[in-house]
Length: 302
Image (cartoon, rainbow, N blue to C red; front, side, top):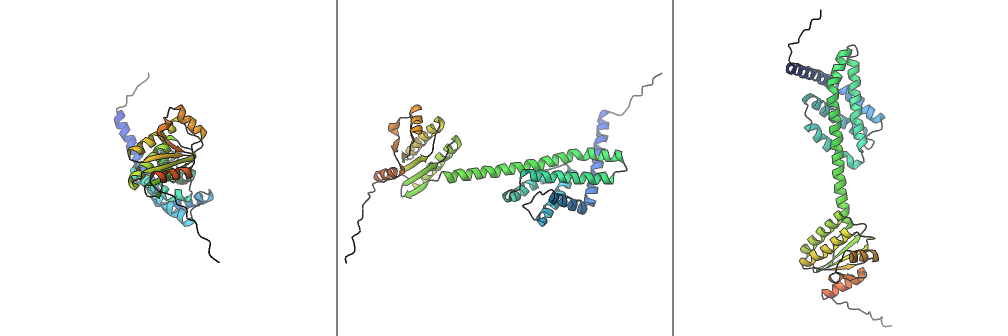
């Protein structure tokens, strides 16, 4: 005869028991990590140096950062919240990225810490295999999330810095220069994509308003090619400048770019073009009413 015994423990109560058991294990884990803080962070710092990570930093700096990361790590395990760790990861990234520290180095040190802590747990619970498994089951999700949090924070900060650097490079590559009162020159060098074309227009229109410019010379001698989208944007830039009261002279048109302008149906009669930059500046000065007067120096009398 088979006797079936029905459990009176509800799934909800069992789930609550599991949660409380996991919380108790994590408290025990945190107590272990705090009690062995000095030894574990020293071991971690040693492993970082052996793996040749964070080579841009001194030994003292590595130990200082290891201490901060360790404390934030333990706090995240204890509280289950990651805001403080995220803030520290961003702060760390701001400080070490300019020194050449790479993403794989930061991920590597976090994984090393996970390994150091796991080894310490193996040593502590080597005589209690069931307890060891339970501790590791409770620790692993937190460790994985911590590693992901630090990695994502570092990558986001690196991407932000790259965007800022790209923005700075674009601004430097499209300088609006004031050569004399009411006259601006915009020399463009390199490839122009739609994003750079929009930035160019914004910079030029701001400069026209700021300097109350009447004539602008856009020199595209250094632009090898231009697709129809960017060519259309150039035409729009000319029109927008005209609305602000500035005439635009385009210089350095290559045969390829001229063909593109014709292909998209630009009325070249509305675009003031001159062959080269020198000719463009002379034409701009004529429009502004400047006259070039040659000064002939007299030879000194003997």
